[in-house]
Image (cartoon, rainbow, N blue to C red; front, side, top):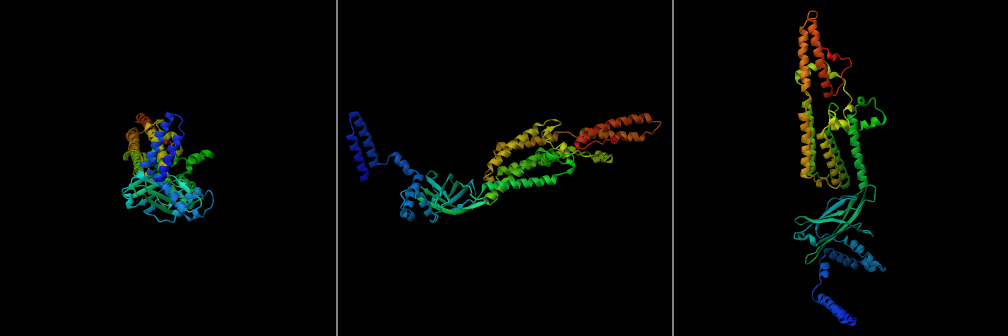
Length: 474
């Protein structure tokens, strides 16, 4: 206080000595008196703000600890004050933790984010606005590096959680890194705490490369399992490779038709599996999957199942119709190669026209896929998908399945085959010779009915009409 008063008196004498006119002197006098009274009687607002700043309190403590270290006292360099934080960090690595502290994982993703949780009774009534935490990597070395603190919040009673940026690993696979966390609860009496831990930091680039390899191997396995040489016997070079690797071919339905719902299921499965594998390599633990993501996968699975069930119903013929055509050998017709149907155009078109239901589902699938990839790189348990988007995906799936349900693909075929069976019975009754005219007329009617039925049957089961046209004869 004596020093403060002495400084104030010096300010006053200086102002009076430098006054050259009455107005200037009065202004300087008022200002100087205000500063002097503020400093002698109560702290000025600026000083109070600095004093209440928890990070300034913490930084002052680090400086104080640094000056008390033996390394600082023994250092004779002129710039040793520049290394004072290093001295403090090195010293605090030897101090025990005041609180029970847990690192989020002993394997941290290099270049990603990590978390540490402090637990103690002193934290129960703590005010987040009065808490400051600093983090350093390579804390025990001669060059500790400050880390960015992303967030400090009270997760639950007596729990203070700190989210921080993890430094990138400088080794191909992983590095062992020393971390120091120092903080203060700036209440009436500040509470200082620290936590030193050694953890494994994985190389994110390596994790990404291995994750991509995992997805590629799994995809190539699907390519091998679904590969049919008969479909590509006349393809070579780039055309063969493009068709063989096509996801539309891999997810094609039973008769080789392109399936939007099955592509969606496979796409989301690979995305989630790849992210899970990446997080496992980065943190040595399998990540949780958020409820929203599980709902999304469930919607896709139900939609695919519903579409497949609906399609099966829509191409299933009546037992008597099926028996008749089996007897005629129609189900033995040569199947068209899957590449005639497992194409991008067939994926979005129905009867050579744009199917808005398929297009809608495709657009929403792509948007959600990119979002999950970007949001799930650090924790799949934190992936949040809005309810409106889930509703939209669900509606899209429902409309897609409903569109398949209302599509009538067998009625005309059933009627044509029924006419064929009736005409065949009439022809068998008529005798050759005397009733040849009637018989010929019925055979012509049968031929027309069979030709129409074949036109419905072939695209329904993706097969090719025989060239000999024996199927037109009763």
